[in-house]
Amino acid sequence: MERTLYLDDLKVGDSFRSGEHVLDEAQIIAFARDFDPQPFHTDPAAAVQHPLFQGLAASGWHTAALTMKLLVTSGIPLADGIIGSGGALAWPQPTRAGDVLHVEAQVLEVTPSRSRPDRGMVVMRFETRNQHGELLQSFTPKMVVSRRPA
Amino acid sequence: MERTLYLDDLKVGDSFRSGEHVLDEAQIIAFARDFDPQPFHTDPAAAVQHPLFQGLAASGWHTAALTMKLLVTSGIPLADGIIGSGGALAWPQPTRAGDVLHVEAQVLEVTPSRSRPDRGMVVMRFETRNQHGELLQSFTPKMVVSRRPA
Image 1 (cartoon, rainbow over the protein chains, first blue to last red):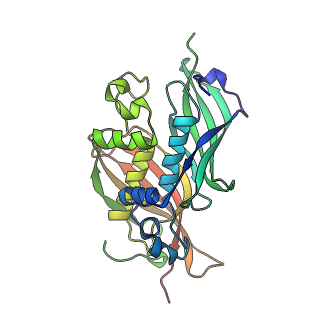
Image 2 (image 1 turned 180 degrees about the horizontal axis):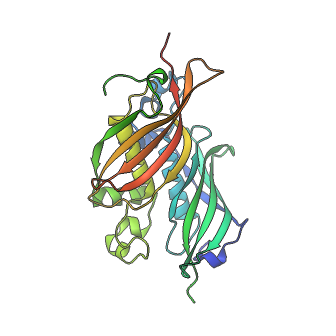
Image 3 (image 1 turned 180 degrees about the vertical axis):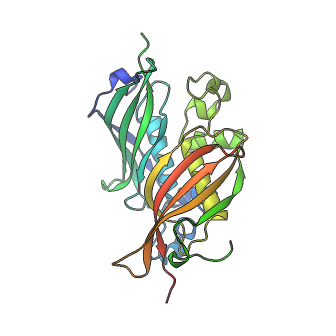
């Protein structure tokens, strides 16, 4: 989509699909060294020994950050930006090197503000999946979305 | 704390405080260029004009990633690592350049697994605050924690 979307353009059930991000081992290790330096995220040999991961896994926050990148660069062109105040986050399974990520988005709620006529609240569900369709992350944020100027 | 903590060492109400991270404008812009390239995260001049942020703000995912860094490097030395399957995430107010972040952690639930005698589930609340005590992020994950070997 090229055009800018306002609250008025969104309705419950609308869905979007982002572009793709190809994840490799070097990206996983670089992110983890900065933000989540645990051996199962930084050291492929050590990760094999980990009872849960049994191999290198991306930090969940790396999956989350890449999800945001996909939404911003190829997802939903919301007026005034993609701005969330939080929501329920889940990582059902690890993200691995070689995964090709995309995001599937669905509009769950659209609520114009009663006190602020220029904006409203939208609840969306973002599912981050790999090339096999496996669900790596779900996030269901409340977002602030501008209304179309009169 | 230097020692390794197992499920058996944690009880409801236990609390921990991490070290600190000094955030500056360059870090905010660098993270946002990679993962959240929106003008209110990458361009201080444009950010001033944004109706909600009114100045450069860190990506919420940057706050989340720095929270994880603080927990891993100075927070809670859990055996087998700090591993969450997700939880409720909220950003009550923006993180700004000049903020000095720390994390306050509290144990909310400790539940040994019935099917897996080597582990259990812990619910914690992580509050990320700045030097003024302002709450920037809360996250309440379910975590998998190993039991002390017999």
